Length: 117
Length: 401
Image (cartoon, rainbow over all chains, first blue to last red; front, side, top):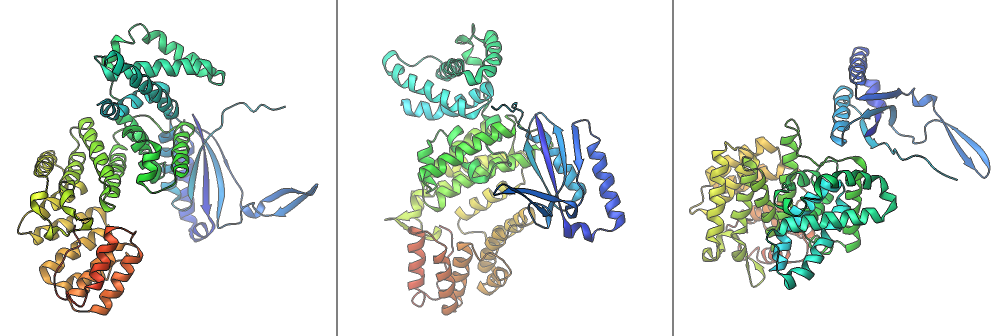
């Protein structure tokens, strides 16, 4: 099965880190992402760079910033191949051990083909 | 008679079907059909020589028929056909060799990715064989709520790929803790509310646990703990009112239950158990002995405190300390605890305050405990204590009942 790991970070926790700590965390994350069962990943730029698109009354409405305005933000997106949930949780747990702040939401990937009219 | 067989076999049959079908919902439906067929045929034709095997085989066949009928599950049928080819000839006679897969099932149902109330409900449904309606009534929630909770959990197991397997060694200790916690939670739900049915159900599950994990000290200790407490059931209520441990009629205690509990505790100790359930079972046992060895009880609670870090354990140690060193010492320990939402914390404080003659403080504490207590014997008991405060001043009691 494939699982998406949605890695959430926390603004306050990140601001409190020293450069040295941040380097260590980045290196730790890189190590986990190099595992063979990690089949893909994306790191996201800061939420300051986010633009949110809505459609209201036939018009496009853009807002500066993320959809959910919170101290917690989606920092990255990792795809893991695992036999079952425990396999995906193990990767998430390793990442959390490195990252310490924030949390990781583990979601099974919907593999059914997208069919429609 | 038939009902008893059904209750005993349900867990094995469902577990085997989950292993075969990979889906709890399908497994339950198939099991239900097989049991219905059995209910119709067995009284007429006599029960088969191997009821478990018969039920599993029949349920498997029903499931396959049904899957074939449902085109949406075409892919699954292919897989099943392949498995069937290997199994069909010997299906009926191989019945005796179906492996017991209840252990896999309980680890699935108690997987920590499920909410605890869902774990509890699922365990009672799939392994205990209770109906959704029975579980809803036991936990005082509407049928629809319980039904939704169970359905959601079953779907999550399927969609998120929660494994149907005994966890690997590195995960086993924590996963086993989760399983035992669910069983003990079911027991306590029955114990606190006096719903003996749930306590008995937890004991049945506890028995399965030691059958499935004969070398697990904590599983033995949990069953010991439940049996020792359960043995006092008949003495805990008189005319519907709570009776404290010290006032209980010991002739009403179930000696066989206590004996069995002690044997299991010995077995746990021989397995080098020293976990939280071993300690709790040892404490439960000490409470039954006269005179009570409060010193040993306090020591064991301290050990348990180190293991669990739970403030509830510290509270219980405070009760022992109050017996050994006096109510002031007990209170001093209680005042450090953040247990404002725990009814026994307030009833314990109230009791110690009452013993010190601090009636106003005791009254406030009883009132707070009452706010947190459901209507029933516990509530009436506390009301009685509150009303009798000035009358019974200085008379020692314990919260144990």
